[in-house]
Image (cartoon, rainbow, N blue to C red):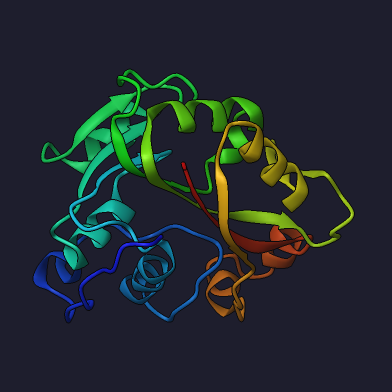
Length: 216
């Protein structure tokens, strides 16, 4: 059962003044904050959740989520120390592999992973996610799938794009239950503006995908 969340407030000064941009190829709203707002609607993170952000980079997604949901706390995990340092000192961080997180079993109410799952083996990712998640925790993943739905995986410059069946079978093996899967509509205008003349070359063979799992 999902937990109800409070209504999203108007954009606050924390979000508006953030110098960090959400560097994601696919967008589901015209602005950074609108994009994050939509992710929050789909994620339905529990009230007061302790959230583990896997592959958090400079923390821009966590910062904008917390601007909307000050009840949430975040722990950022990334292997890039410079990115974590850019996030600032207000966050709890681990410079670590997302498949080897220095946290006890059952530590988190929710896990967030935006475009980082493809850097590691899928089975290892979900085993570690299930280990650090509490019973009832949400595992929310924003990633991509191959445009050709028959492909089990596709390499995008060293990043592994896994097919839906691949992802969901490994998640089930780790004990996670699929809440929902969706492929959100993206008009690609933001991505084309960021990668003029190259967006189709980079992302023409993939489409955005979102999973929400829970740990029973």
